[in-house]
Length: 165
Ligand code: COA
Figure (cartoon, rainbow, N blue to C red):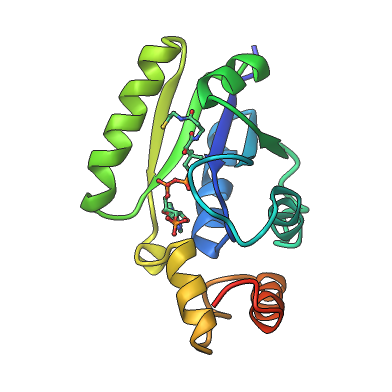
């Protein structure tokens, strides 16, 4: 049976840290669905479709077992619908652990067929998050080392159009 994992997130926007986790997960599972949350609690600067477009621009061509999708509602329901057995999450620091443990336990209670698999972020990416990248971008800092060129460009456009400040 094909082992499918879902890598969920807001990805507003995607960073090299997310891509690194995705590539490693793709080596562990037959298929990984990178699932963009359309309507979670976060206020996003990119629409779900824009976030998918930016992920597509990240050079995932060689990853034949990766799919991109947008999901709404409960993550565990989405996993059920996709026949997935695992949730992939990246752990960057001890500070991520408490929240991730809560979320992993909750998801297992909601759907006991699903396990959360944590991958430790590479030290090169352990200090970045989408918010911190947006913060640096808005202040005119160099973000090219943390995100693909298309993402940096899209952030500059949003800043110029005053979508975020
Ligand atoms: N590299 C870079 N950044 C990383 C990272 C990595 N390896 N791993 C995590 N991050 C960042 C993310 O970019 C995000 O940054 P931000 O807060 O600046 O946006 C942060 O760490 C993690 O944010 P968090 O809110 O924990 O998760 P998320 O935004 O990635 O996604 C969902 C959360 C969508 C998975 C979760 O809200 C969800 O499942 N929603 C669906 C509704 C549901 O089922 N709820 C009940 C279960 S909680």
